Structure formats: structure tokens, C-alpha cells
Image (tube, rainbow, N blue to C red; front, side):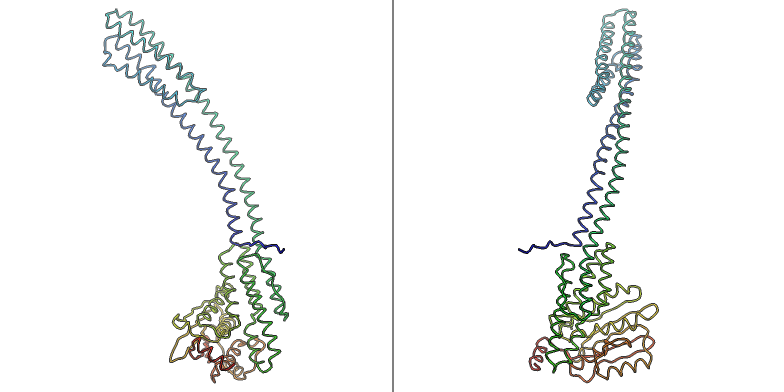
Length: 488
């Protein structure tokens, strides 16, 4: 039983790597942040508790004994002094702080609270003595006890503050240790994350590079004339369509070669089909190299865009063996070609395409515009200092489709233009492009052969650039099939 091949995706590999890195970096940060916030909260709470107890010290050690003295000396009455209110507030504060204090530091506050009960009992005794008319001397003796108890409570509050300071110091030490350990762990995690990233990037690059290298090998074999070479199906989702289209291209090439050997009567048309279907290997090599380079650089969106454009380029070039395609497909074909070429000649090449959607349903002979655009790029824009722009336009007029490919390149001299027009008039298949115009000669031959028209390409050139134009009759899909059935 054949094992099912596992699908792998470039985007999936990148997403998996990014998720791993995020988890590795974020999870320990969250833990360390929670720990630091916890200890910071405890530290802040301890500071607040000590602040409140510090405020009580002056009340217990100074204000309460002073108010008791004012009462004993007759300067104030109990209602005027509000001494009981202060004692109650002190007791409430001690109880509240005790409830929020750790078990090991509560004892001083608990004893202080009980001692405050003793202090209140002495105040009650002073009140009772005053109400009973007891001599002031006896109240002065009680007042001395009040001062002693207040001093004792103040001492206990000092003991509590000292314990809290010790505990806070220990928390500060633990916080420093946690911060240091966290910093060390984060540094280790960053190092590990970088190692994981490098490994994942290499794996992703290998994921893309291996099938592309296979594509290069097979296309090189195809370019050498061995048309039975095929590419095995790849696991990479983004490259699968391209692989299948290259295999389909090879199938069509092989079929057309066999047909050309068997059909001598249509040899000339078969030769032209072979030339139009064969894709320049250097163009494919350069495009695949660009995809590999962008994949290794992590530029995923551009890899996907280039791969999609190249797949569309092959698909429309083949068109399931059809010679006639809608004008909208021809437009898409040159758009894909120009997008791919702009990746290589970004700084020197610009282009504009003006083909209205209203005429996109008319059928034309496929691959009429791309060779002209290619000629404008390599013999006009590329050799001009500073580059230029390619303008592609089409319009309908009087039952004809008028096409124009104009560039702002270096242009041709009068002698060069005359030589090119001579080559076009010879109607002899051109097998090399050393002198330029390879695509123009073949497009002109196909126009005359398939449309049976006396006129083919019209070429104008000068210092400002070159314009290649032609026209073909407007034909619908039904008219194409009708003409094919009659001629067949």
C-alpha cells in the first residue's frame, strides 16, 4: 500500500515557528511579571501598614496622655477632649492592621491591642474618680499609670514596625533574587529562541529549496531536448500547482514533437507551436532563483506572489492545447510576465496596461502580446540607461481589435529598423535572437498564418523608443469554433 505523502506548507512552517517563539518568550515573561507584581504588592502593603502604625505612635504616646492630663487638671471635660474617640480609633486601626499582617508579625499588635484595654480602664477610673469627687492627687497617680501604659503600647508598636521592616527587607532580597533569576532565564530563552529560529529558517529554506532544485533539474533536462523528463509531485502546497503545470508543459511539448514528426503537411504550424510553447529556460531559472532567494530571506508574501504569477504564466501559455484564448486571458498572461520581470528589473522597468474589460471576451490567437513585450524589455528598456516604461493598450474600432506595445527605451536606428523589417518580410522561422527581434518575427508569422491577413506587424522606432502595433478581427468563441471546424 502506497504511503500517503504529508502535505507541507511554507506559510504553515513560518506560522509554526512564530508560534513557538512567541510561547517561548511570552510564557516566562508572564510568570516573572506575576511574581514581581505579587512581591511588589506585598511590599507596598507592608509600607502602608507601617505608615498607619507610625501615625498611631504620636496619638498613643503623646495625644492621649496629654488629653488625660488636661482632664485631670480641669482644663477640659471628657466630652471636650474626645479621648474616648481617639482610643476607639486606635483600637480599630490596630485590629485592621492585625488582620492584614502575617502570622509571624501579629503578636506585638495583639499585645498592644490588649494593653490599650488596660489604658482605657485607667481612663475610665479617672472618669469615675472625677464623678465621685476624689482628690486630684489620686487621679495624678492614675495619670502616671496612663503614661506608663501609653509608653508600653508605643514600645509594642515600635516592635511591630521593626518586625515589618525585617520582613520587608527579606521580601526585597527575594525580589532581587527573582529579578536576577528571571533575567538569566530570559537570556537563556532568547538564546534558545534564536537557535530554534535559525533551525526553523533552515528547515523552511530546505522545504522550498529542494523542490525548486528538482524543478531546475527537470527544466534543464527539458531544455536539452529530453522531453520525457517529469517532476515528482512535491509536498509543498505552494509549489504543487507550479510542478504540475511544468509537467503539463512537458507533456504538451512531447505531444507536439511527436505530432510534428507524424504530420509533415502541417510541419510549419507545428514548428511554430513548439516555439511558442517552449518557455525560455533562462527566464524560468531566474524566476526560480528569485523565489529561492526570497524564501531564504523570509519574504513569504513575495514568494507566494511570484509562484502564483509563474503558475498563471505556464497555465495560460498551455491553455490545455488551445490556440485561441479570450483577450482577458492574454491580458492576465502579460500581467503575470511583467510582474515576474519587475522583480528582476524593479529599478529600471515600469509598465502600464490599458486593455478595457469590455473587449475581454473576444478571442484572439494566444501569445501575441508577450513576445512583443519581451522584445520591448530586452531590446528597449534593459539597454537604456535609467530604464523606461512599457505601455500595452488595446481598443475596438470598426470590428477590429487594435493592439499597441510601446516602450520608452533606446529605440532603433534607421538601419536597424530596416533590417528588422527585412527579416519580418522573409517569413523564415528564426532560430536565434542574437540580432534582436526573434519574438517579433515569429509573432508576425503567426498573425499571417492563422488570420490569413496580408498585413502583420507595424513597427515604428526612433530615439524616444519603439512602438509595435497590429490589428486582428473581432471574433467570438462561436466564430472561432466555426472557423476551426470548416478548416479542419
